[in-house]
Image 1 (tube, helix red, strand yellow):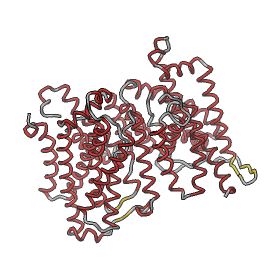
Image 2 (cartoon, chains in turn purple, red):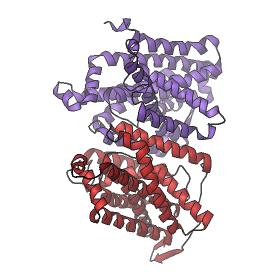
Image 3 (cartoon, chains in turn red, purple):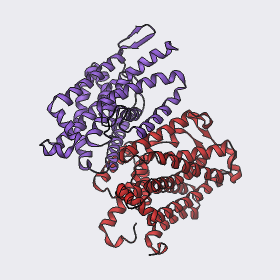
Image 4 (cartoon, chains in turn cyan, blue):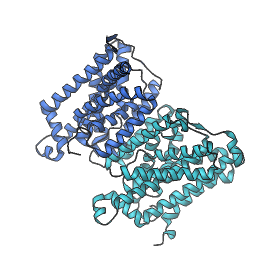
Length: 322
Length: 287
């Protein structure tokens, strides 16, 4: 069946587009900020899903690529005076190159060994940013406010990053659908099920894994450059926050590992829930504990996530959810 | 040079015993059931607070307090095993990584609400001893001695007692051990409980040395990962040697370069060892 006629291809795209158009139509800045954080979660979760869900490699270091994109973007804008568009490209490109180099080395490790290596890489990157003076060391870098003048002032710059982030979210989802249906994606999923058998059947596992790693790294790299441009300030702790990596895994698990719609649902759902917990007077102080309980319950009882569970239990929804 | 290097290395090596002790718990759990306990740091922090409250609130000697903390840790570990690990002990690694991380979030969430994230300090001192250029605090020596004692007890337990031999048997081959009539579930729970207890003890000892907050556990958990990989995943006694190496490195490196580069070197080393010798520096061929 042609991909473009499948409802499961359009459903996540339409959902996200509708979400993005909502603040654009109303021009409401508060609503834009809320949707922005949802889009960010969706991009991070969907890109992680390419590695985690399709290929079955657990990375606790996905935020590394967000941080690298952010640092390269900020450095090129702040120190070299590049335009945002170029800086964003540089951020995505450097995250991709980094993933290629790291992937070639660490994707040989399997299971928990790989997971541990990614934790090590994240901590090494954070410590490096902390110690490396051209990146500002522990205080990081702050954009001069005049930078925003060339984009029509700070207000316009915020809208500009919103549009760019919306486009990025749509591209990630389309790419993740495309990969899932492609021969490349089938190779990744066979690696997930049984890497040895996949290699025997002719899948070039080392190359496929490395490209999956690169594909999943480019998007957070671009997003990092956009986010820290909007934020105007980058610090090692914000850029390489281990807990943020884990949050991404939670979003993917919540929505459904290895599905296209899952990370969209999971990213939006997790963010919505966290927003609710933080402002709720009853849960405000223990929001971390509530989120932890939720995570534990999902892992123990609904390991397929929301979308996976629906696919398993509600037959008619199968062609809509993938 | 030697005058600055020597005290720094002695301090580092003494601290290394505690790193080794903390890592031993992580390594034991990994060795027996292939689970990486991401709540390790949170439990270390709970051990710190346990000693703080027993010392400050009840006036108990910190070293006696650690014994109580160890017992509570043992019980807590068994409960944690049955709630969060037992159902998924055979699932792919992602499940147990996330389940233990969930427990960590629960502990940190509740503790942050109770203790806030501000620093605490166990105000306890035993004076210091000087030998040549080296001056060492007695609390550090006591902590290292305590860590050695616990290691020795663990060794005797694992190699000389029946439950300890059960643990090693289950670690070697769970199915075969179960067929020989070893109660595998109880043994897994016991091994997990001991791993948690070791984390709590190391937290309690660390509390006598440094100020701490509920978030301090994380940095010790990361060090434990480094140590475990140095000593070989699943090799508890190798962990002690790994701890000493890390402690010595932390003593030597700051003498030669700014302190901020220390973690860069530690974690790069960590990744490299994981890549070239995943069985650890002292591990055999078993990977």
